[in-house]
Length: 181
Image 1: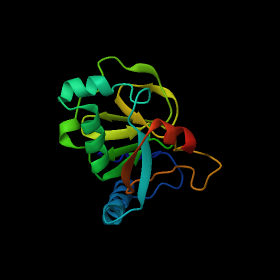
Image 2: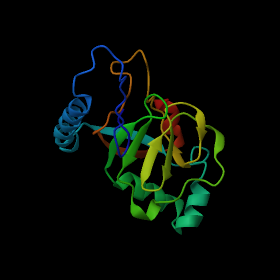
Image 3: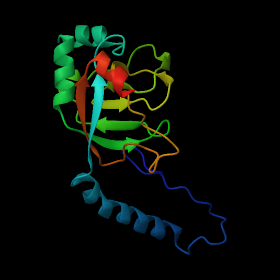
Image 4: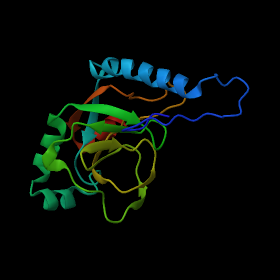
């Protein structure tokens, strides 16, 4: 089970097909994963994700502006200027966690999470950006929303983004959001 900073290996010690040396086999699997790391960091697809950083899509923009001392337009500019990389997909199907956030935008999670964060919300916390693939509870700082569907089980592949992909956020206005939706 891959995670952001580790890998969990689960196995049934009573399974009839368990190798004679299960820990040795685990070490082989880990080495195989390590060999794959350059493939994930040496490229990846470049995906442009349109984002409306305006109200009512940017639920926490005023609070983020107050905490960072930056104007909302500067927050949007800085967020869109960086190239982000998909570190992992998790929490809910298709929800990416991205590295590459401008350090000036690095904030703690909200003190009180929301019970409902709209699908497509682009949110920041600590040194990452996440895009909510479904309406779920969440405690990240929402600075915009994309009209793109991040997960569609009828699409191949179902997730729009995959680990290793590079993401560029493209600012759009509310009218463009509605047209793309």
